Length: 246
Image 1 (cartoon, rainbow, N blue to C red):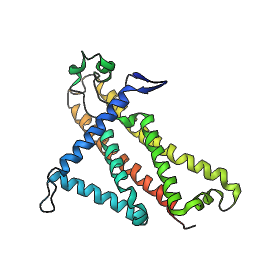
Image 2: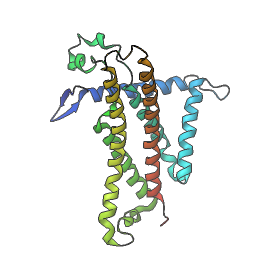
Image 3: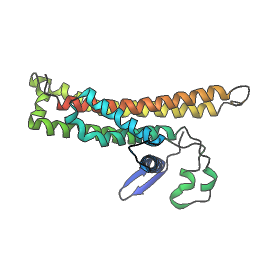
Image 4: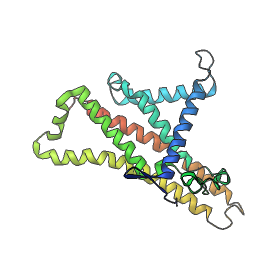
């Protein structure tokens, strides 16, 4: 669906469009937050400030509902960044690239090919992005586990008996894999189906725009749900790591 354009960086390579869309998502998140706190007040807040405060309270409640908030408060900022980044990433693939003609003559770094297609791309429709986010989650799990339990954190790999070590290792590896593939699969499938619908002849004739609008609305809903699921599972995995209950 998306042409893969490779940039050579030293001895490695990166997917150019994924990287550009990731930069765009980061820019959107920064602008969204700056606009929300531009006229910060404790009196009558604006709509964006209200929205940001709701997101903060929502993520804070997710932490407190799953674990001791004192143990999880340190990851509040990261989780806020995570849920907003994933949400806006999921939305990018639903936006028609109306600026494509502007990049037709831009040869620098093949931007005319990267940004000159019919549709934009969600960074989370690339398994590399979701795998990176899942890796950050599992690193967070280990860090908080060691922070709260010290070396005792690693004892759960051999409990109740050392023979269970392979099972615990499989479970440890499966967590980031399921996180990555669940997010990637849902977003990539949504983009693919939108592309297929757009290729149907006369889709916007005889009421065809109605099912298209319905599918776009459903895709927005799925994108929001997936950002929530990824965040709440990150909290749940950290909660398991800091828990001393057996």
